[in-house]
Length: 324
Image (cartoon, rainbow, N blue to C red; front, side, top):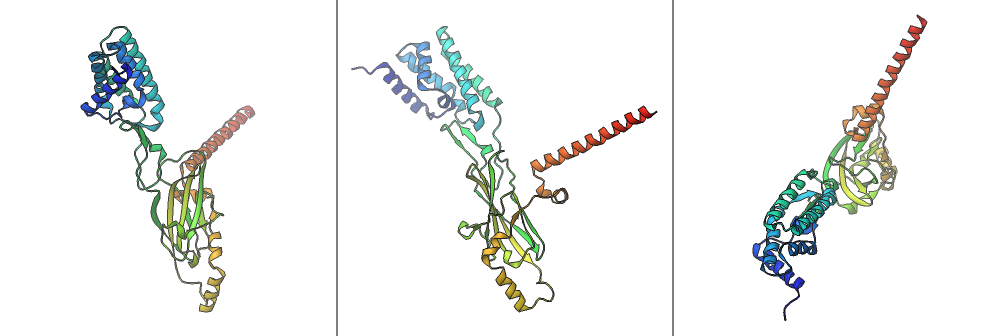
């Protein structure tokens, strides 16, 4: 008994794809359904027969050039809409008794131009981080992927003289989401230089992207970690190894030094780091504190100051003329 037409068409399509060596994962198959493609070919070539098989093979072959296309993840809906319009146009051509041998290559070329005009995929910025802004959609497999980079950033060395203050800036060189960003700080004491999370304990007093310790003491020698989180998902883990240098204060005996170390024993170490909101002078003195938001703030302050000076000059000029 003969197979139903639809089942036969499916088998024929699978055979064509296998023989042609084209995986069933091109952009055409990501953004159109088998039912849509079959309906177009049935309108072009009839409900069944060799001509229908030829039409389906031509449809797949025309779009083979888009097999390895890679697009910006945020452009998926735009590309889906373009494929929907394409299928509608092909259906109209088929109804008008057009030739699929001409229509399919023309449609594929138009879709190639559409893909070329989409917003480009942003490059991955090493060395670390979950960079959602660079997420891409791959037609070979119809799936999305992000940069293959570790979540843990390399340890940064910070050397501070005893009694001074240590400052840490939890910033990355890739774009973060604009909302729901949180920062949490941890500390691994005892002079450990490590990225092993089992050695770290929470420091609840530090919550922003800037943190500092003052005054720095030898007990602060160790690794500080900052975790950047978006919507409860970690985007990056930064590490700072703090090395404390310098002799003890003048006149301090060995016994006094030992007693001081006992007073600064472990449980209090995690409480010395605090969130830091830099002043204008500190922002200008420390370039790493000039984040994009701080730069915008400084630009706004400069613009307001300029507008204020202009307004005062205009008021003085009007007063001077009215007095004259």
